[in-house]
Image (cartoon, rainbow, N blue to C red; front, side):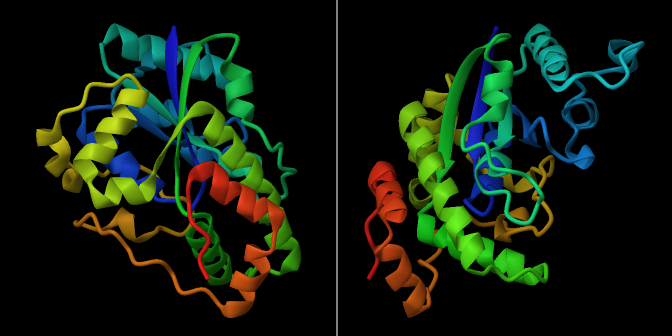
Length: 259
C-alpha cells in the first residue's frame, strides 16, 4: 500500500503548506511522529478531524503501536478513497533542541513504516537562515534562548535534513508563497496527488491542523504572504557563512549565501 510522507522542520512554513494541502481535499495528519506528543495522536486526528476512524475500528485495540495505528488509518482512507498525507514531525529526528531527545539525523518514521508501505516521500524547506532565526525566536519566547550548543546542534541537524531532502525531493516554501498555484502543483505532483487550482482559495477556511507549542503567522493568517528575509545579527551571519555544514545545506537546497 502506498503511503505519502511529507517531511518538515519546525518554523519552515509547514502550517501554511498543511492548510493549502487540506484545501485540496487531502486528509493531512499533522505533526505526526513515533515519539510525538499525545496531543498529536494520529488516531485522534483521523477520528476527530476526518472521520476515518470510528469506535468499532478501535474495539479491543487499546494502545496500538505507531506503525499499526498508521496502517489502520491508511486502510480506512483507502476504503473511503480519501487521499492521505502524513505530515512528519521531522524536527524530532534532526533538531529536537531542549526536548530531551537525541537526534537520530535520519527519519525514524520512514524507517518504521518502510516494511509496511510503499513510501512516497517529499520535503518542504525554507532558507536555513530564516528557519534558524524563527526557531531561535520561538525558543526565546519559551524562555529558552539558544546558546552556542543549540546552534551547533541545529547546524548538525540542518545539514542532515538537507541531505535527506535532496535525496527524496523537495519544494521550497519561498516558491510556494511566491506562486501558490505553481508551488502546490509541484508538491502535489511529487506526492502523486490531484491538484485543482480553483480549490486554493479554500485554504482560508481550513482549521484541522496543529502548530506546535508556539503558533506561527500562518496559523491565523488569511493571506499567503511572501515574507521578507529576517534581519540577522551580523555575528550570526559571520558565524554561519563560515560554517561548512551551513554552506552544504544551502548548496543542497539551492539557496544563496546572504551577506
